[in-house]
Amino acid sequence: MNVVLFGASGMIGQGVLRECLLDPDVTSVLAVGRSSTGQQYPKLREIVQKNLFDYSAIEDRLTGLDACFFCLGVSSAGMSETDYRRVTYDLTIAAAETLARLNPNMVFVFVSGAGTDSSEKGRSMWARVKGQTENALLRMPFRAAYMFRPGAIVPLHGIKSKTRVYQLAYTLIGPILPWLERRWPDQITTTEKLGRAMLKAARDGAPKKILETRDIATLAG
Image 1 (tube, one colour):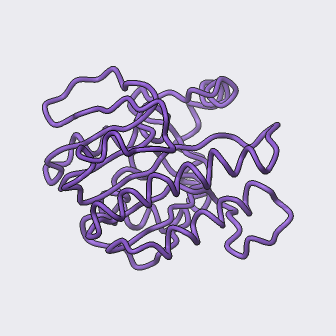
Image 2: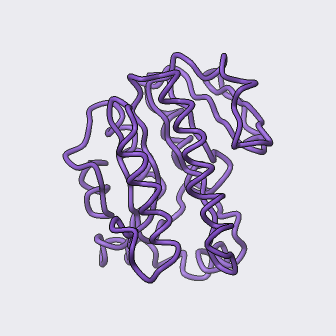
């Protein structure tokens, strides 16, 4: 399986990248992002792409792909709806439209978030925009598309969040995070389980198009 991964330098993307590199069914991983992962592995290739709204210059490198794991995302804190929609909806759809045209047999897996609003009409701005993005992806001509809606995510294996306040919280409550995950399996997952579940969906499919935290844990096995 040849995989393209967006956002491999972020916390979620780091976890997904780790699971891809460990999975014997994954032949190659193409990491696309604004910065390099700084990692070197035989089956890892990278494209540093500053403009994530236009892929015309690298289309020849985006073919022959079986799955896309889209892990890019930003916090909506302090952002207007217009700005948040551009870096969430517009950015995601720009990549997805290119990949769907070049790889119609691809499985596209999008990391959304718990509380996403599929109706696109709720009061929460970020939830509406995520819902618009999910709905647009589900209409695209991929072989399959899956929307992952994790709640809190525990970083494992030395992975760190690039958001300072999140990383501080993980550091402070780190010793009890495994207990919290067992106590609230509907709300908390790990970077390892998320990565394994995404690979499972890409390889074997999933019972639902939209997967919440408990669905992710079940799929990860």
